[in-house]
Image 1 (cartoon, rainbow, N blue to C red):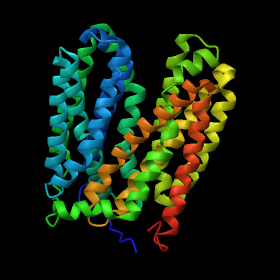
Image 2: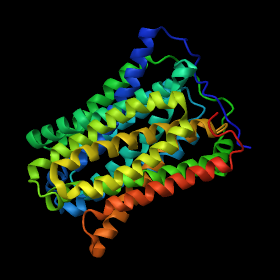
Image 3: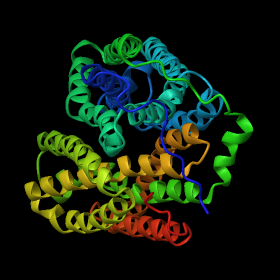
Image 4: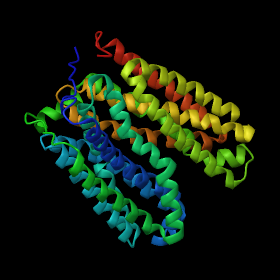
Length: 403
């Protein structure tokens, strides 16, 4: 039987309501900084390529280097940081994030920027994992889903506000200014964390050996697999949104930002909704979001040739996908037993695997001659596979699925 652990990093009601709001805002601002940094590279790829003297396809390696950093950093930092005080660990992670953003801005060669982007990805997963644990611990038990969603909301808002603003700044003042701006936001986050996040102890009983038991936890592994597979559909579609809009939908290049804005707005709406649904039922929400994701992927395939009609479908893709992300986070926090720090951090490692998997499979079907609509069908298939993994998880969980 899977042991379930409640989130007890802090006692609900241990801080005044106003102070709680500032604490959650501080944690969400860190998510905003991370989201802006992660996605602004895509918006400034031509300028970055020119700045370090490589082609645009080669510059795409900087995106992969960051994702690899997330996958590597999440388990390592979580294992060795589980015993550290939460507030200090969060502040340290954001301070490190600021330093590596400055290093990215200072990079003068392809190799140096590759290293800087890899290093910048290291704190990503651990920050979201620990911040989610702290936020959930500060909230009343019936509102823990909303608390975790509030932290994730910073990442979503970054795609609506932070990424466009940083992209505009990078185009106007040079791409290095975008990384310097996100470094400044990271420093501000450090200050707000130290001011408003209460002192929360780490887990004194945590050891590397005990945290590593997470990887022998069948429910945790199935949850990670569900995320890596089921969330891959979103990236199968989003990775090729520009040519889908222009070549299939027949719209001009100037229409592409409208669709990327729909992507970001969908993330914000979905993250907000996810918190409400999670307070109702985490596992049931996961199943329904998987079903909804598969249906919307088919809608994207059907609407792609009809220009602007595709925009609402893109909004729904990311709205439903964001519901999945938040509830996967909560599911991992529940089934991870004594390795909650590692479990919470591994969610974003799983999602970055989904990023790579979805983009790769989408590229395969395009290269095979099936056209730019085909990745939506790949996304539908991945959604079905994700549901299958979740049902497998439920079948082996002996009735404790939603506790």
